[in-house]
Length: 73
Image (cartoon, rainbow, N blue to C red; front, side):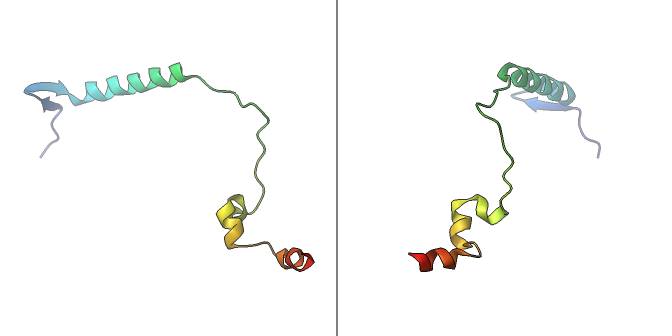
């Protein structure tokens, strides 16, 4: 069975390819209208290990020398 080229919505037939092309044009126009927001400060790459990038990860996996800090207190 071949795919139909049209879609019927409320009794009216629309070309699927034409609808897809219109939607792509609509999204492209929206992206251009959004513009680009510059950063307020220089973005720096986070070089910490993946678990240490979030508070939950730091709590779940304390650093290797955390016991030294605990004994000093």
